[in-house]
Length: 465
Ligand code: BG6
Image (cartoon, rainbow, N blue to C red):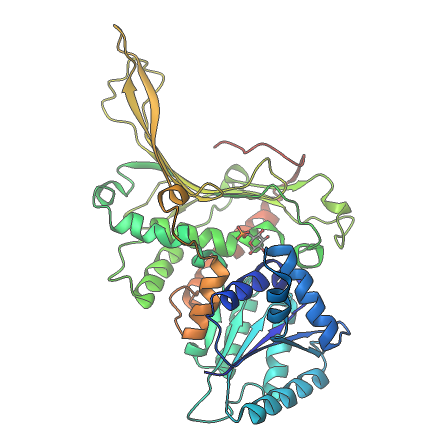
């Protein structure tokens, strides 16, 4: 089916890092619709040719492919200069799309991807509407879909406003709220891991599990993303979305099926049960940090108070998890990249431990990045005449186990899902609102309790809990 993909914010970081490689992969695999056009929309003054040259550069930087292939791929792209706040660009875009449909003699599918700074979302949506771009070209054929990147708003209030606005312009089945973590292979595997292994389920609760820790640590600083990052900070950038989605998948109740709606509902329920630390607990259970040198990064305020690191110990107010501490920890410019969930089981009672001061606990580490896999520690007797017990582990490496199989990148999978109209891996309004309620409450707590912004050195070691 003929499809036009409009990327609003087409010269930015997301385009370069994620969209270009994903689209190129689909192109190489022949997965793109036969009649397909990508329209880049951005304020930069570019011609079609210079935009295509930019696409070629971006592609070369990310994939190893023959020049002719890359050149051919770049010819899917055309360019529409426009300023998000000004109507002219949108009008020209509408004219271009009309012309494209006339040339193709069809009413093509339209996909609008908002890949811009969240502060522009409202303006972009209003201008898309006022220039007629959200109106279908025919009642029978050609769908219109909209993709909104995270962060969806900057707090509960702005998220609700954005949602209301989207609701006025589109039906729910046209809206794709993106959290690319949901498209990662190892994130999807959490469902299989939890619900296809019956030995886990009886132990997956407060009676057997002592604590849960979810980490998203990155070795890189913010690079050239200062405009986006400063004022948003680590907690809104990855905490409100990626990390809470991981928490939801690891700790949710069994959904009635693997069906999209059932899974989204189960995720939303667990997010609604989140309990933010309050009062004096805020200082005790939360921490904020900023790496040294952050204030000197490009487009960052010299006196910026934005956090690049946070740690929060929270809990869930539900029967399964009541009282179990759940740590969320994330930072930029850390010692290494690591995205994982660490589940620590309670020690046996009574504990027949030879060393009374060292309880034997089993720890399950589910690593999402970089070494995807699962590692479970267990205790064994060291050979010899004494009863000496040592910790060892079983481990499973996802890439090694499925060596010959193709690992689809998150954006590849999600873009295809959007074209196919499958919303399973996208976030529902209910989940977004529940996560903002939690985030707002933490941020208010930080302000009220004056939680200090601690400075840390770049390459800080992973902080063990
Ligand atoms: C993005 C954040 O959503 O996720 C980035 O804006 C972060 O700050 C990135 O680096 C992490 O995603 P991935 O897929 O690189 O682990």
